[in-house]
Amino acid sequence: MAISIAEIIILSLIADWVLRRFHIPGLIGMLLVGVVLGPYVLDWINPDLLAIGPDLRLIALIVILLRVGFELSRKTLHSVGGRILLLAFVPASLEGVTITLIGPWLLGVTYLESAILGTVLAAVSPAVVVPSMIRFIKERKGEEKEIPSMVMAAASVDDIYVIVAHSVVMGLYLGKQVNVAWQVGSVPISLILGIGVGLLIGMCLYHLFERFNPRATKRVLIILAISVMLVRFEHLLAGYVPFAGLVSAMAIGFVILEKREFMAHEISAKLAKIWVFAEIILFSMVGAQVNITVAWKAGLVGAAVIAIGLLARGAGAFLCLLKSPLNLRERFFVLVAYSPKATVQAAIGSAPLMAMRAAGIDTGPGELILAIAVLSIILTAPTGAWAISILGDRILTVPAYDATTESSSNEL
Image (tube, rainbow, N blue to C red; front, side, top):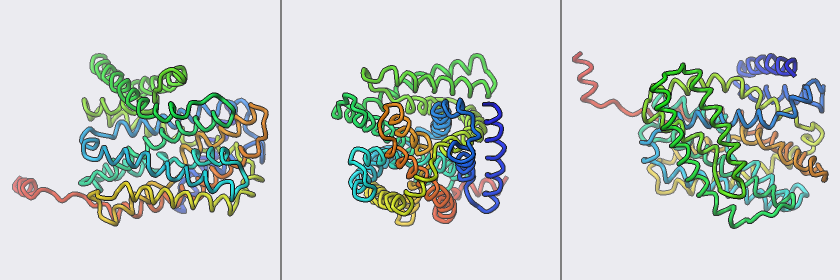
């Protein structure tokens, strides 16, 4: 297994470097490395590594969501909190429902299988969105209207909402007893409980770090380990108490950021370094699950499903921004920034296939869902990353310096 990891890292870094020379996001190269080394092409990846793929993908998702928590301030939440909630639920819901309705007609699957695809595709990618928004925040672009922070926070809650919806639909598909009304009602409860637990843990960790002053690396390892246990805690409570472990992990960073900003930024910088490895594992592992034959068959029809879903998502985002202080250009930027697919599709895209295989039922729909999930990454991640960078630099403005402050600086 160690040899497989070494091969993946080396080839992914080379692919990342080559593609970035052509201004193509490196994650596409990592995805292709997984496809080539995977069981459907060269079959070089150790089966033991493929077996722990879901756990590795979960850790990668936790890392990127932790970065959000360490960059999201209370001031931002007070300013655009309501808008964040609208953007977190409305666009994803419209996209998922639209794909559910058109899937049987275009793909020849059942409505329930189409709903599974809808919950896989409906999430926006924090892997593409969050690093870009953090860059804009550090450069103070869009700061006056809190646009980068709003997009970053909404994208993260959007992911958690879609993951919950995905688990509900998968339960229905596999014949489990699922109380849909309870599951829908449990979403706000799980978010509130998750935030509360995360704030409490964050406060405890802050006092612990203040008293013993461990190195930043150890702080990151402690936070990452606790975050993984929170997700495990969520699974243990499933069916008894709704609890959002990923939201709880994000809330930890929020507390530390409020109490000690320098410490929070230091931890965020360490998480950014961990993300270099986590990103490689995340995208290479999902690439290894792709059946090339099925992906090829998905082709134009799969692309059409993705495009129609994005149109519905864009309409939902536009509705959420009505009566907002954003001008038309800034609203267009939010729509574009809210379109890339990558992280969640990589994290749960293969889950239906694995569940169908474990249940001993036809895996054809699962292979199709995975193929379209990967196709959505290939089509939207590079174009989304390019568009976010170009439009953000042109549309988002830096607040003008206060005249008094500027005069004082000149006098000094």
